[in-house]
Length: 115
Length: 115
Image (cartoon, rainbow over all chains, first blue to last red):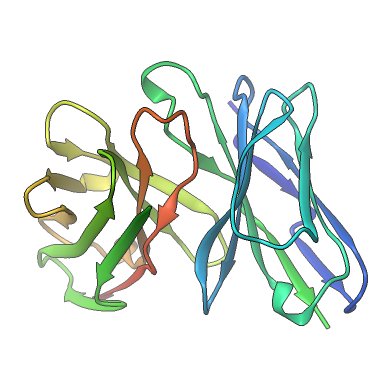
């Protein structure tokens, strides 16, 4: 079974621009979560989607948004990019059902650099 | 509210020696606990989890961890370190039974294995 895929893997943007990152979960997984990883703040939860609905949201400004499609694929968008948004953005998917419901499987991440 | 503390941002062991990575948590409700490993330029891989049942859990690559409620700890161990174990390890927690897939991570411990 294919793992979680994220595109693109690397991205360079300029301050003030916006960016959209994509995540395809493991087949059959219904929950998709997004995390930001930086050297200073570590791994921080952005939001989680289940059946196209945002169930949880972390403590990030409204410039960070996301959505989930009917096939469970998810996108996250960051508008008006700031230098501090440079990070590795990780997507994780979960079956969200049964004994394995809390296991999250991570993709390789998208490395975003804002200049 | 939850938090995770990993003691030691960097741990070095000799090849063949015991690996012990420490994790303490704080949670207002019974938690589910996880250990993840991250190799350079990759996403996170689930090593093991504790949800319910046996407090000593075994994971992949010979790692195991013991949930000690009285000590609010979930330390990761491996009897004999291999060079391939060199990576960064993250302890994470999520509240049990809340239907939440929001993981709170520790700051990580970078493990070096000396030949």
